[in-house]
Length: 402
Ligand SMILES: [Zn+2]
Image (cartoon, rainbow, N blue to C red):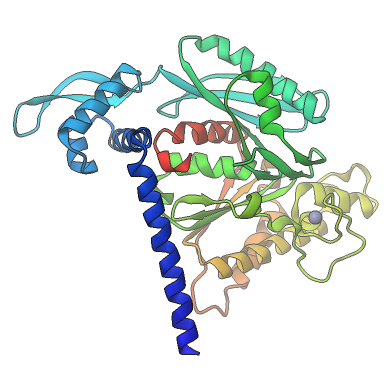
């Protein structure tokens, strides 16, 4: 048995080192890629530190002074870095400092919901430079792609001088980002829609798509240094449920974008009386999403399926309890340092929130390890569009993510 186990481990090690060799061989073989990675390294140092001298960049990155001089000259030429007028002594002669350029490049972040398209243009520093909103008349993929293209075109005109990196669209559902395909979206009723390509044909620029919760996570990662390089899970509850899994500060996407798809697991034996938009019955989505809770309130005969109606209290309590238990189960499996629950504003201060926290805490009552801290944050709608935009800007700082 021991031999087999060792053999397996050696095999894994051999595979890892082969992959390393192939990766480094590919990089040695491509000067363009090395340059791209070095540019990302330099930009990332300046992003993290603010005003930085070339000598500091050299010391931090380990690149040669000549390489740093060449790369920073190129980046200044492209407008991605600007030289400030401030001179600072660095022990030797005074050095001109570098900071991120603010007007050279922008990316469009889009939040697509079933009734509107919200676009923000963000610059290299993550600042919003323009916004625009259009209403969405129907949720067919063609109509949605038309509306996204129209909204991007409207906002693009307002910063005509900047180079557009591309468009990043966030929407609710299971999204295969590398392939640009919406695998499933309950809100839109889409299955296997190649939405990135559809928008790209209309916008003539690069387009990526992602789930709302991954876009939110991207925004948090860029803004909140506490999450950098950490293991965390971000859960979201709105019309649908979603989750984003961060491993070492990076979004883990799983096979075909399936990571975080906990909404369509069942909290117990599947309840036939709770049909889910995925085609199954009794999914967590039917218990704990706002869409699921509204449907259940209506099924119990409460008029208007309102979250504050007569039947709502018990439904919200059930919904929160099921989500709290599901979050604890997920956390015990994965062992994150931090959990975040992004919550639709209409759930704040309700029985849902109380039951969710209570159930989550109770799940750790007999646990050897303490519960990870659970932070609740409201789902401000513009955070999703900004996060989507940051995702594209962020590629400039992390060449290996392309
Ligand atoms: Zn389902």
